[in-house]
Image 1 (cartoon, rainbow over the protein chains, first blue to last red):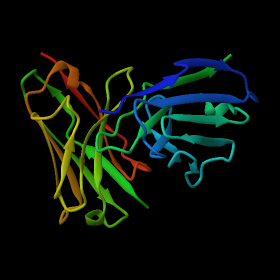
Image 2: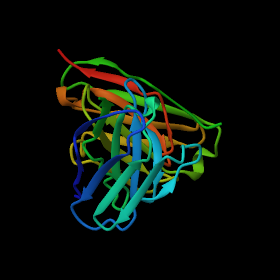
Image 3: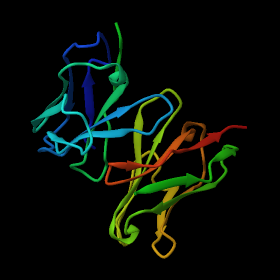
Length: 107
Length: 113
């Protein structure tokens, strides 16, 4: 099975900061990589699909990049509503592994 | 608009069974594959199972293979997850999802004696 790792596991940031989260797959997954945002008590929300495509309705401050095994989610200017946990997920194989998550909280 | 509503969660003893349902509306259910994903309390997301649009192929996480069965009734626009031989580690909120863009609100399953 494909394993997904994320770094950091948590970070503290201020409103307006640029935030970068990385995700690594244990083998090449081409661009079959999704990013999600999840707030407590809520279902995950799809932000980015196919590594770099912005889901409809998601603010343009969110962007994704990468292919193969290394991927990045960037929030260009952190907003108060962005404090949440972020997950990557591979959809290359029919065992749709999620990363362990990155919690973004207020500094 | 797409709506997914899970039901069937509750408290069950270890070794017991439970069937979850996911009622779908707002799209042509019979044209889309569907997933179950779970999240244990305070933990991350874990994909559980996937079924193709016509039920022809089903895929499972190793952690539930042989114990859980995903199925669907396209005439009722409903997705199911039959969970047998439940263990404490199956305690989680269970979500159904379409296309990864649409998720239900989740239903809580607690396995405890």
